[in-house]
Length: 291
Ligand code: KG4
Ligand code: ZN
Image 1 (cartoon, rainbow, N blue to C red):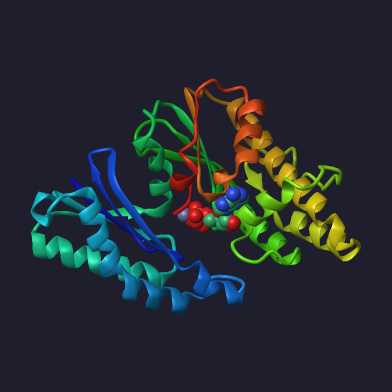
Image 2 (tube, helix red, strand yellow):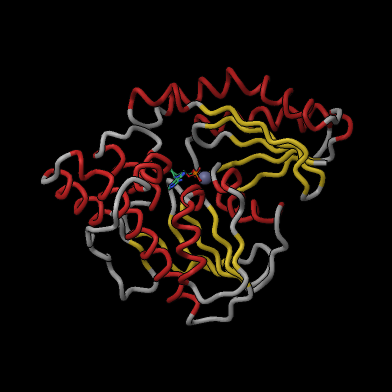
């Protein structure tokens, strides 16, 4: 019976799990506090985590209908993430572990994204993982549980960051991904944005794409913004599908796992499902893709 705490960025989240089964998963989003600044303000994030963590913890325990004495482990995200924000979760977790005299399990944020799939699917090895979030864009090969080999990494921006920056250019606000996805539904894919470093199997690059969008936005009327949103979303989907395909050609793959906030995007999910020649593809439900 695990109590798990995550405060790596702008969401205070506590879950109770019975093995792999999620009994409760309570999340407080700080978005409305950061929105006016156009992105996450680290100091504000730390303070809001400190204000909310007790309530979220109590609610997670109540919804799970378990008592503190039922818990066997405390798990906590230890990074990568915002240092001050992580510290709030780690302090709460450490205190609980000491008070209840049960083990503290430190969890790497990226491992958390990957293993989120495990509460809904059985993982099969060797697997190929594509992780796309606000801070990371990677393809990883996993031979066995927790045996990772990085196949491709970003040379500059992360995929989610590209969504967030483009959303800002289109005056859509923060966080960008869901706003671009919504606007794209009103537009056509009629702009051929560049496909960066297409031949390179071991790297992603998103900064040039960002610049290409900026140039286009400067030359466009707001009526064209839905087309820009649809076209950039399509380009990002093709970039991800293409790199996954390249990686899958060089090794045995029993299963493809997609994880991280960007895969909350329905267009990207279905594009990869139709373009990548791997039969067993698992994608956590949107709520488990994000932090
Ligand atoms: O994994 P995550 O919640 O936090 C990090 O570890 O970074 O990912 C957040 C990122 C943000 O950049 C956000 O814009 C993006 O995931 N994202 C999306 C969608 N929902 C969240 N990107 C595209 N479409 C979405 N629906
Ligand atoms: Zn994350």
